[in-house]
Length: 443
Image (spheres, helix red, strand yellow):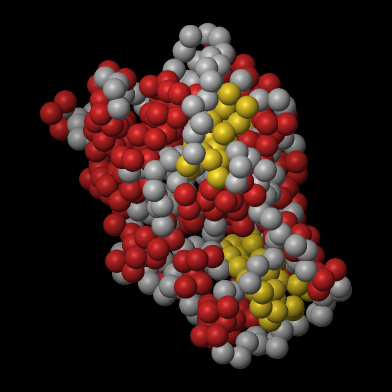
């Protein structure tokens, strides 16, 4: 069958799709990965075929600007999808969330030229299955218009599934004239603009015909939605194992520190200064391997003697030698640490699902978190020492790892995806017209 992956133009989102796309390709299926030019080289370096759609997204720059614009707003203007304050959340909060997400995220991640190109690719190539990133709602639109089956591939806890299900339940209790749904309005308009009809809109365009979920079962948000569990397999991109990583650590224990773009380069809402974390680990009998961009290292000046600063190191290679990790709550970092049963201390950056992951980590016993609003070097130091010295965190981490190991691998679920595609695809048989030479990178 033909499988089209649609991903947001951010490297971490591409990486979340690589192992499943590779599993389908090595099983003999035709696979294309479509995104904006920002990440085409990342797709190609992963050994996959990339197709350009739309223009550059520049998501990192836009994220930094958005963070700066929401200083003091713990909900980031509705962009913090973690529902940790309300259960259930009130209708005005829910409406504000989907209004903000539609206007500031979904429409920006999927601007009209990108949607048009993806729909055109799907109509030309006629995929049997479209696998789409939860933020790339052009994916289900293209699938609906081309008759393909389609599924969401999550990169973290299914906040969209929970929040969208709750929001729709709230709307159903409202009189028809008060059922304001900005996301459905945008999707309906997009379908009509691309040649579909208003009747094509359904919740499948938000939640997929089914969901592929790499979240460990105990951390999964319980939802009454069709889902396929899959084992998380780390992919760190092209990388070279540094010589120092083959040597014994300089201290009895090793701690990884990785801050991501938001924490490393900004000090606005939902972020914390790298200097606070470095002050917290200064003098500990621990080798701290910190991934810090060169520009940031220059700003920080002299680093503590026990800190080894590097531009990049593949976490999949580094973490087996570590006793713990401090990070910002990024999905790839979070999941890779779980795979290796490494206790985690999260300082959430507040965007999307960071707080959700922090809370689930604490519930699992595999680590803890410090709210960015409470950060101080003293509190961080206390939490780091607890992470390293309390054996219950390592026990909790091993328990979660056992769940991951017991989950079907990407290769294992290929037959499941084949069956579901046959059940949901329009037309009932594979469609194989000639591909009209889409623009590719790295050919």
